[in-house]
Length: 346
Image (tube, rainbow, N blue to C red; front, side, top):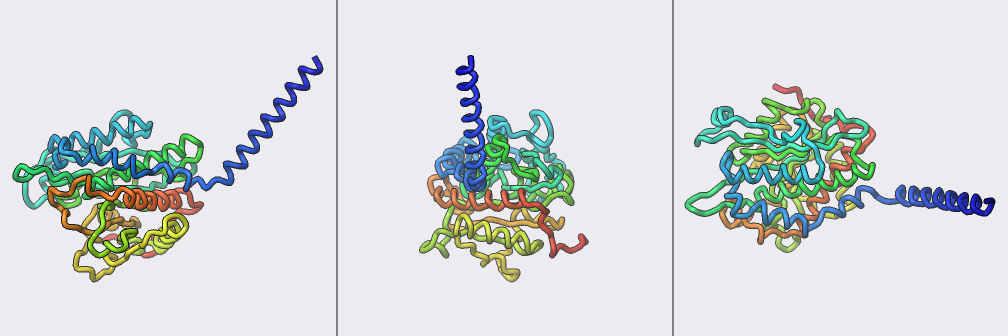
């Protein structure tokens, strides 16, 4: 009996020691790097060759191809166990045709929807980090499908991989301190409509509780300016409302990615005015700090030749990981970033 008790005690001691060792090893692991590594070119490609396929008919706002696209996004979140902030099985924020048609200059469109998914923060659940991209594109014109692989299939699938990485962390007890809203907006090509509906009509979470918006719109290609050095991404707006967000972005890139951060289009005198041309701008108007991630235009921009076979998936992986690292840092800081350059709304 004594021998049995001794063996049992020894096993218990070894188990305790093993647990402490595992705990110590876990403490020494860079959790951000661990989960960023789950974002891969292979998975991004698998998503994009479906999402930007002819089956989705160019994802024209309100049309059958766009409905297939939103179902694809919803099914992904359901399969990953990532919940909707709307509750239950409802991942669609409806954007009524009546509202859409009041806000477009030309054309007549059907009901559409934003897709929303959510990971609740472990310590500061009422503070929301938004990661956004637009789900729509140009549809079919003159019998040709405008697949929109870069614009903005690349941003869309990047969000899916980022969401999966955060969900893996949450399942392992390493979830973000602040909540993350994954926001896929409709009608961007018609005038930033889905994001405008979210910010101006029906913000699911109060905008005053929204820490920042990291907006991804075209991050899968290389423009002519960077053909000799493709390890780059344009950042726009990172310093416009929050000095701190810009500093964090720079620090995360230096620590993890070493991508050339090009601020050419961040110039207020930039004639392209890209700062005003993607969904982050509706958050800007509401004093929410933003970063817009962008690879610049190319020969296939807004053409039927913007297809998934032309995406550089290694670059897409690196740029997606940069967004993830920035979101991870902002979501896990002890204090909320300060919008020190915000001005009162007019």
